[in-house]
Length: 298
Ligand code: NAD
Ligand code: MG
Image 1 (cartoon, protein in one colour):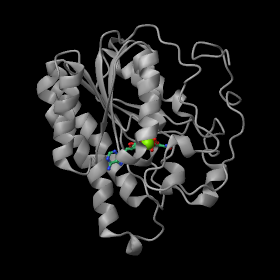
Image 2 (cartoon, rainbow, N blue to C red):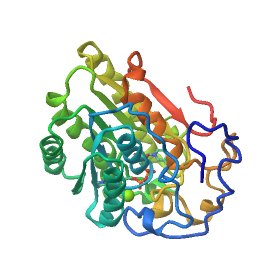
Image 3 (cartoon, helix red, strand yellow):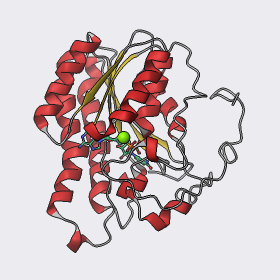
């Protein structure tokens, strides 16, 4: 493939029609098991030194949007630490290899973000490995569809909020003492924050919380020179979806409702994170950058 993110392309035909068959992935799911494979920009992302020397921590940096962002950050010159669940080791090592191929350092931190103690030690360990921190990407997320609130277990509700909201709070709080002016925090929210699906009541609620958390914290930190922003993906082909994020029968048409007419690929999300991480976005704070194939947002 010769294309990269600088080549003129028609977004409607950039990717071949993707009609995934049913594929029930266990646990968080992995990129290694996805059919067809997602595009994380392995062959296409071309960096131009926009994050040279920066030190980044990306939660859920083993796969999907976080994995694509890790590759892009490394190709822009950043050292990158990623966190992920222990069962995602294979994906994590693949991304770490791609980071190192880009000529920067990669550090891998398996662990469960629903554990507050792990969130705190993750930040401490990443700061030590990287020798500081100036980009934090709170990207890990849990999404399990449920069709009827009366069958939504207390455990799932709790785990979804712990993963998506509490971990973000613990990690951000632990990271703040290390962030100097010019540092950036980027949170992964979702179009679900304002266009919630009937089957994602718990998940969509966490994403609305992340959106507002982002805007409120941005008010607090902008005067200190630290910018907090969010990226709100629309439907993107990642392990999250076949691993219980959607009913299997919906995978075939996943994303077709977007005006661009298809699901996004993780590679198409990474440049939004690069923009918000780099000084190119020096006057952008408290913003949610929607990357959703054209679906209108508030
Ligand atoms: P993904 O499965 O590739 O990434 C999610 C990651 O979260 C996993 O790789 C895993 O490492 C991490 N994670 C989940 N539970 C964890 C736990 N308890 N402890 C540690 N790590 C845990 O899927 P993705 O779609 O790239 O997800 C990245 C972010 O994008 C998520 O916040 C998700 O909500 C958001 N998002 C995705 C879509 C989409 O359509 N794929 C749409 C909107 C928002
Ligand atoms: Mg993963």
